[in-house]
Amino acid sequence: MLDDQEIKRLLLRAAARDEGAADAFGRLYRLTASLVLGVAQRVVGRRELAEEVLHDTFVKIWNAAATFDPLANQPVAWMVAIARNRALDLVASADHARVESVSDLAGEDDSDAVLDRFYDWSENAAGADEAEDLRRARGFLRRCLGELAAVERQALVLAYHHGMSHGDLAAHLAKPLGTVKTWVRRGMDNLRACVEHCMDPRSDAGHAMKGER
Amino acid sequence: MRFSSHRLLDALCGEYLVGTLRGRPRRRFERALKQEPLVAARLAYWQRTYALRPSNDMRVQPDPNTWRRLEADLDLAKYRRPWWQRVGLWRLWATAATAALVVVIGMQVQVFEGQRQLVEVAKLAGKDQPPTVTASLSKDRQFLELRSVRPIEAGPQQSYELWLIPKEGGAPLSLAVLGRLDARLIVPSAQRARLQAGATLAVSVEPAGGSPTGAPTGPVILVGAIQT
Image 1 (tube, rainbow over the protein chains, first blue to last red):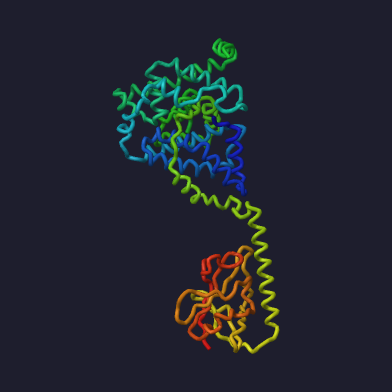
Image 2: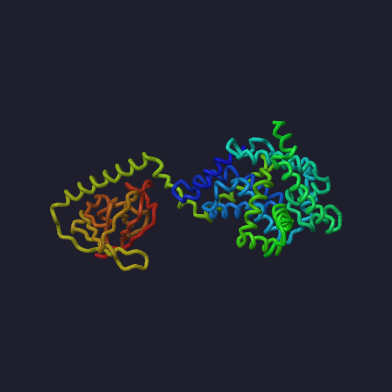
C-alpha cells in the first residue's frame, strides 16, 4: 500500500535538488511508476504511448516538485492527475483507432467490477495520516457511485478509466452522441448531489456511515 | 472565461476530471484555471473529494528503458553523490596511492642530484595544439626531464603516465607515473636504447597510481616525436 506521507517526503526531497535528490526521485519512481503506467495504459490504450506518458509525467513531476503543496494536495492524486492530463493530451493528438483498442477491454467492461478491482476504497488506502474527512469521502463516493443509474455509472467509468471521449462512448455503446453526453453530465451531477448530501453533518447518510464503522 | 453560475462551473470541473472535456474547451478551462482563483479553488475541491485512488491491480510494470531515458533527460547524475565518495575506503586508498607516488618521485629526484648535461629531444603537444611540454635527455640516456610551460597537475584521483612508443612500433612502454608534468626521472635501463630519433613520447591520463593494465587506458593528452 502506498503511504502518502512517504510520497510527500520523497517529493520534497526531490524538490531540494541536493545530492540526495536523484535517489529520492528514483525511489519515488520505483514506488509509483507502475501505477502511473497502469493509469496511462488504460487511457491511451497502447503500450508504447503509455510509456511516453510515464516519461512525460515524471519529467513534469521532477520539474514541478517544488510547487507541490503538501498541505493542500494528496500526493498520489496529484501525480495521477498529471498522468491523466498528459494521457488525454496524447489521445487527443494521436490519430489512432481509439474505439478499436477499447473494444478489447479484456473483462474490464463491467463498471462495478472495474471500480472495485482497480481502485482502492479501503479506510487506510492513503496511510495512517490521512485526514478524517478524506477517508469518509472515499466511502461516500463508492456508495454514491453504486447508487447511480447503471447507464450513468457505466458512462462515467468508461470515460474515466478507459479515457473515452463523448464520441468514443457513443460508438462503444451504440447510442446517439446527445444521449451519452446526458448520461455523463447527469451522472456527475447526481454523484455530486449524493456525496454532498452524505458529507453534510446534518444528513442521515453521514450519521449512518459513521455508525457503521 | 466567464461562468454564469456555480452550476456550470461544477459541470465543467466534473467533465474535466472525468476526461470528457477535450480539445479547445479543455484548453480554455485550463487557462481559466490559471487566471481565475474561483475556478482553481472549485477544481481543487473536486479533486480532493472525487479523485479515485488506483489500487495495486492497476499496476503495469514499466520498460526499464523509460527510467534510463528519464535519468539522461533530467541529468539526474548531477543530483547524486559520486559513488567513490559514498565508499570511504576508496578515498583512503586514493590518498595512500598519491602519498606512495610522492615518495617514489622524491627518491628519483634525489638520485638525480648529480646534474648532467641535458639536451632537448622532443616537444609534446595535444592534438592540434602548440607544444606545452619539452622533454630533455642526458647524453647517457639515463635521465629524462619534463618541463611544462604552465603547471599541469593531475587531479586527486588521477595520475599522468609517460609512455615510450618505440621507433619500430609495438606496444607503448611505460616510462613513469607522474603527479605533474614538471619532473625529472630515471629512464628504466631496459628502455634507454629505445629513446632515439623516430621513437615517440606520449602522456596519458590514468587512475591514481598509474595504468592498472600496463597499457594506456585513459585519454592521451600529449604526444611528441623524439628528434636528436
